[in-house]
Amino acid sequence: MTSSPKPNPAASGSGPSADGPLLSLRWAENKLLLLDQRLLPGEIVFLELTTPEEVWDAIHGMKVRGAPAIGIAAAYGVVLGALRYAGAPAGWLPAVNQAAAHLATSRPTAVNLFWALGRMKERAEALSAGPDADNLAALTQGLLEEAKSIHLEDEEVCRRIGESALPLLKDGMGVLTHCNAGGLATARYGTALAPIYLAHEQGMTLRVYADETRPVLQGARLTAFELQQAGVDVTLLCDNMAGMVMQKGWVEAVIVGTDRVAANGDVANKIGTYSLAVLAKAHGIPFYVASPLSTIDLDTESGKDIPIEERPDTEVTEAFGKRTAPEGIKVFNPSFDVTPNELVTAIITEKGIVRAPYRESLARLFADK
Ligand code: MRU
Image (cartoon, rainbow, N blue to C red; front, side, top):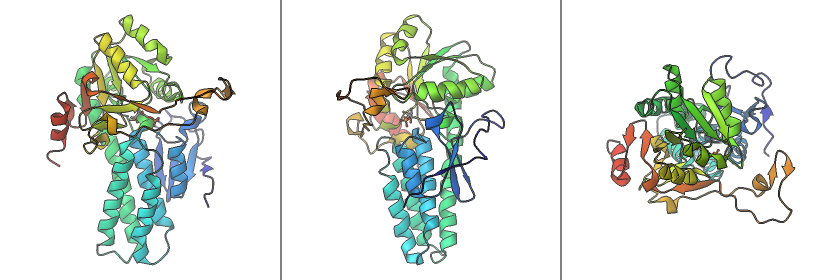
């Protein structure tokens, strides 16, 4: 059934700064080339994925992670489902929908997954009702174009998020971030890290503090790595050091990404984000959330309605390949938490910065759609 994805030796070991930043995914020759983020920063290995099941496994196993990147990978996963379909044209749409339904079960919290799959299903339906309904190659080509648009648009959206946020930054400022909402979590630039990259491009000097982000260490393994590769001044902290760093006056802004923003402005993001927001409030530091419109879910009323993924106990009971907790210990391992809207100073989007009351300001972002 599911063959194990092959590492791509041609891509393995290619340096991140050799020809621009290290990109988390690429489509080539009817395959999804996916950077295995579980191996960073030690190894740079691209997997060649050829089935929706392999993409499901990569998302579920966090080889690709970060809300926008998950959505892009899933979109290509649907294309892989269409590519392997070789039956009668009437069966194409059900086969595509089946691949999408399977991919939708890979992770529950990041709404970009469902947003991207929704776009792919809509496009598939339109194509199968169009003039090429009997031409499998044309149908699948149309679907590939949609996945490529989702991918390309994300790069543009991230850049615009960076531009929206730039006025919030000043030369010499200290910025704290959590998890990885950088280029690796998106097509390019990231969301929370986009303004940092743009500021850096413009010659501004920022001091970035990256929380290591237990238990999967996206801050240490990914954020510290990609900012260092880009030449940004970055200091790695254990999660429990953020309060002290704020107390010392080293942080003038917190900027994080998000996996889902509810209609009332409550924000789900990597576990530990809520504690940071409370700390930021206690120290009078603005707490910003960078979010593309694809992460804003007006159908989810409030944070209470956001499904929070719980991950295996071993993420907590093991570290550095060794057991670090007693056998049989009870573990609670939610992957995300919800920051209530009253702790969010502003949400930075590709259409500008929005502030409370969020129910109104977020709805306005979609008013002209
Ligand atoms: O579990 P992960 O690594 O997928 O969680 C990622 C985050 O929480 C990010 O902050 C979020 O997806 C935004 S990425 C631009």
